Length: 203
Image (tube, rainbow, N blue to C red; front, top):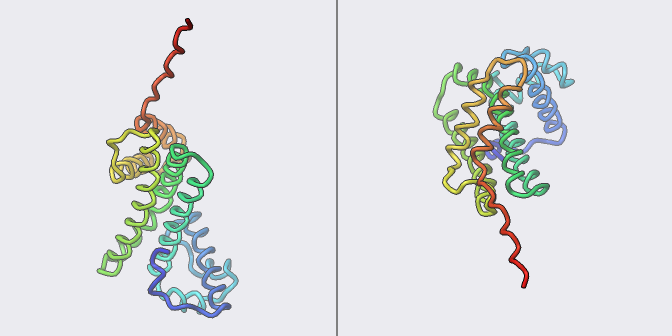
């Protein structure tokens, strides 16, 4: 899991409080942006402000935890798609997940950058990027091996393209245009399928 190696194991009750705060923060940041009230997050989690700050001493530390949590969920979706669908469908379904992730996470990233990019934050961001790239690369390779996706496409190019679509459609009330643009990008990635050869003439 991304970014969890440095955190010491917690007692069961403390872990429950940590998970509740993280879930409440995830919902609050999605609904109200990175400036959501920490007091309201604590109330929604059913804990006191002191408990929230014991687990997350600053807003930035809570934002980082939510950011890492979203990365883990996104990469888990890659495995779910792989198990449920053939490689091409799995890749294209996950790219739609990634598009939604990119749109939802931009405010978190901007707030983290506003707080300052120290060496630790840079390292954590690099870990998250590497985890996403690994998940995407596996999906892409499997789709290319099956002959669904063009062989010259690189993982980094694919992720950059989807991120650019999310950035270009930022601020819209719905994802209609983002979905259309992503469909166009996916169509461009597909490897045209040859028509089956006609049956040989009979004797």
